[in-house]
Length: 422
Image (cartoon, rainbow, N blue to C red):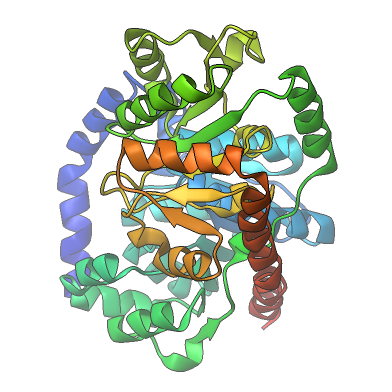
């Protein structure tokens, strides 16, 4: 317990600086300055006749991963769902997807007083944490109050595991306090075991991110948009980070030399970068349409900036091939499965540490190309458009792989049912 007390003391001492950083981040992302008291546990009390499930999805990626789980739990009509996030993009995605079907709040800081206050107002029947976001006080206080906790779709990269090992005592305490861990692969299970989790607490269930389907309304919108684009060659770079946009635009410069009518859809990962990327596109001499203003580009506009939230899946449906960002620079990559839904060729850069197994398996089945620079990216897009038979084969390989790996959702739901009933 001394380790936890010292950890909590550090949190208390750091709190003024954490709040100051929050305000600083809100300059570029105004969502950070909204509802700040919630981060201290001052949430609106949950009043419901149903048991409340607290589901935490730290950011956008985890919110996307949680979507099929939340939909299934809503459909069951057995629980009231309280969804917490840490970032504005994650919170906005949940709000857009579910509206008033769920309650929302910022996650409390991992300070005992904040967590106690949050739990007293939420009164959760169980805590479900998506993927990796484990906090010592959350888990310790939940155990003390007999609120069972479960890690859903758990993953732990070698880099993250090394970080947790630096705080071995705290990590071991968390592994003791958490009730169940449902994880994506055997490799992740082994890393959690090395942190101190008992093997009988861990179940390898696969990756819930496979349990997605193409909404008919989105499919219809994509089909209509494709008709509006009048058959233009269309390429998308999704979830890009600073340092990648220059490379992508350099590749597009090569593409339009051979395909003058080509359209590039460029979708930055973070909303605070929308204006910066728009300025970069103009500086590179391309004519620009913004999704938030122009809906779809006119014939003379060369780049469509995806500056809206929650539309990435739709925008993938407009493209002949997709590049997934966060991978040309050392950011660990992003989920490729939203694009695989559309059975289009996929490419990433080499930095896919956060999705290493997915990257390897998609590559092995012939569905994914790994690129390193603008020349290779241009070559990939051109090849996909100029060889439609090969492009179809690449896209189908990814779609079949997606279908074959579904099933994690039902296993996680079974674990949640067991958790709340025992």
